Length: 125
Image (tube, rainbow, N blue to C red; front, side, top):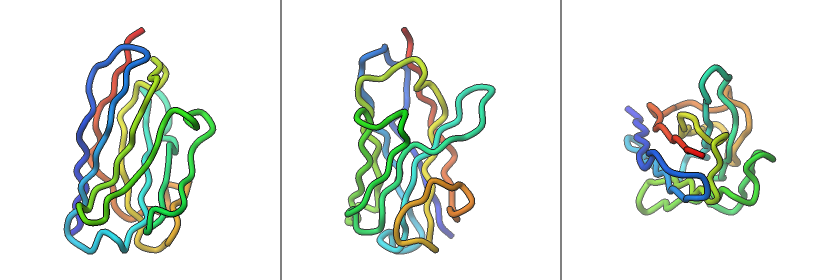
């Protein structure tokens, strides 16, 4: 059974940085492309970033480009989301997701097969 476990969330001030981690267990990690999504209170879940199986290709939502960096360590079965210059509007529950069907990541939730439970990020002004 595949499991995704996020960590690294917390309460920070605007301008601070956080690094989220997501450990994947159950199958060979390099068989998944990975994505990060987030859901703010009262809003739908939205795409944040994605990375392909080999960490060669990344994709970012326009709202986060330049401040967030997705990366992966296949030896550690872990995908990361480095978040810099955080803003109050970044406050959300952040979810990692794994796709076994796609080599590259996707902006579409339906293309992902497994999801983590989420980690809360709160940015105060």
